[in-house]
Length: 347
Image (cartoon, rainbow, N blue to C red; front, side):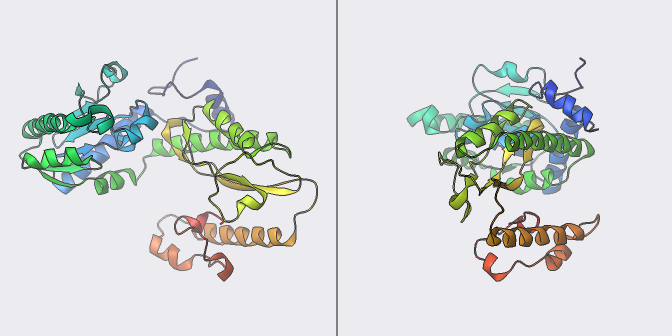
């Protein structure tokens, strides 16, 4: 079977077959990579900085479409990317793993030595940071188009101090990356649709599997398995609970045994194919008896909330207009509501 240009190896044939059956069009990953680099470059130009230095694994992935032990990297920042004003891009990666990106033409240099944290460097972290800062300054001199202003998204204290000791002006880089990522291209939308479809398939398999007598962990494991086999990557939270554990929300998945005639509630909160975050919230009634009146009332409120707000959506409408017109939840739902995204969440 031919491979789509730029298709990540983690996307499974099962997922691709399901997408075809659903009439979905796979994204052109090369087009996505070019678009994302262009978005970041535009932010660099607008901000007037010499370069953008990124440690956040999500931003590194956005800039290079490359990953390396991404969950471990989230709490051990050993990777970094410097995107310069003239387009020169340098990736610092884990030692001896340069081969992971050797076929990526958008990366012009591969280095090591951005691991500016104690677990890796111990008491010599200051020396490592000083060397890293010298490299960044040199690259900025060569490729920063005369600017010594450096935008940085997230950095360890030793790294920040080392950069500032080189008389570089360090500014917040996160606004640049967030604005770059805020507008999706056509192929990113295609990737999102494919990823969401795979997540819906995984949720469907979990619904088929659930029955009284299973633990919350047993049920949640089905979601993880069905997502991973389709090219999903990981789950950000453990938000699946049952019965009396569903309220208030945010109790994590446990070994509690699901009883007949009670609810299960969950958020997928997973990273699906193409690295897209797929967040679906569902509440299921498990059992043959009818749910009691309080649950029916809560479901009606959620239904009214969603249908009202969905009807407001249309191309070109400003968020400020949406906010003013959103459905208002009853007073007894106000204290524990989500403070963001709740307008479309049904909570």
